[in-house]
Image (tube, rainbow, N blue to C red):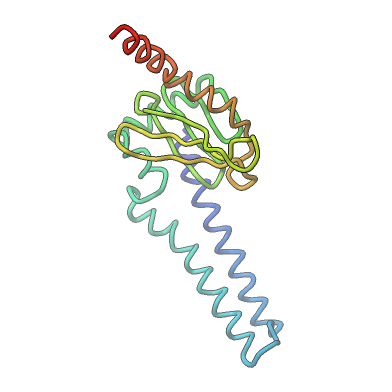
Length: 192
């Protein structure tokens, strides 16, 4: 099984797991009459948790019916034919991949895989990569712009992944050859 299929199954499983947890809380509310602080509290708790459970459980079934709407497939279709891009990503992820936190650096693609989220950008589509300053001296986020006008912003948090922003930004700029284009543009402007 390739990386793409594992990622699709992982996201589906996380949604089903969230639905199962909410269903458990709904049953807990119904069984023990929680919360008791207001009239018909257990019915309200049961109803809210049941609706949340149905909400999360519905997504994997919708994605099974309409696979092009799945977040992984949707992201892959941004950069070409789904089957071709998926096969290319599977092949590259099976080869040597450099990992920096949630980032995967393949031969031709930058993959952001924080567990519950998936984003992919081919290096040839990256126009700029910079660090957005936060509080203090540390960069708060990495910002990447693509030729198609897409804007990706990744924060260094426990939910999105812990990574060294400076090292990751340097690696993105090197892989996308952004430093080469900056130096060639400055040499051309100095000649003119």
